[in-house]
Amino acid sequence: MRALTYVLIGVLGGMGLMSLSQERGSDPTTMLTPVSYAMTSAEQAAELDDEKPWSGADLLEMAQVYDQQADELQSEAVQLEQRAMSLAKKPHMDPKGFTRSGWMLIASTRWKSAKELRELAAMHRSEGQRLLALEKKGEVPPEDLDKESKPSQKHGT
View 1 (cartoon, rainbow, N blue to C red):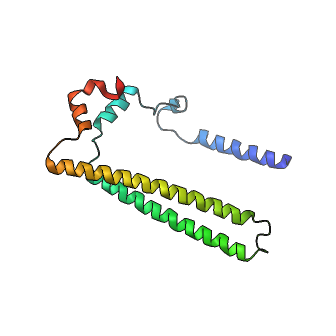
View 2: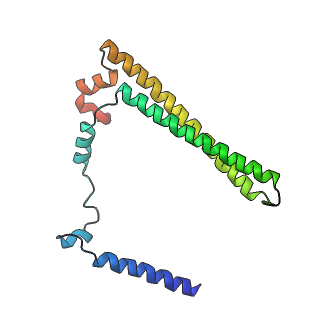
View 3: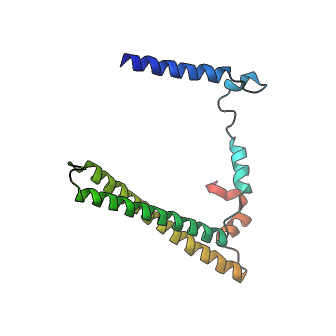
């Protein structure tokens, strides 16, 4: 156990020395400013203002992506359940049933995630269809009207 501790300390120390010896650019104070990459609140607000609202086509595309991910999760869940059932037929491979129950737990988690993705897809699909219908009529969605008429009251301020 003591030898493992020495090895870990040596490896971590070596990694630390390597990171210190690497060139960090022309500015020697880069290691002294760990949060130099963080954005100020004004930069964050400017970035939020630059974002355009989602269109109906974007939401329908996102719904398709969610459906594809849900399909993948469901196929994984089926494979895991089949694997667990094959272990049930061979009790000598898993005498206490830990592996089989673990695979069933993972499969149930996959089923739950797939169900949540299907719900997200349905929500995005309905909202996308609503926005496309509004775009066809030439109307502006109500949330866009709020942004245009009251820009100072964004985010409850």
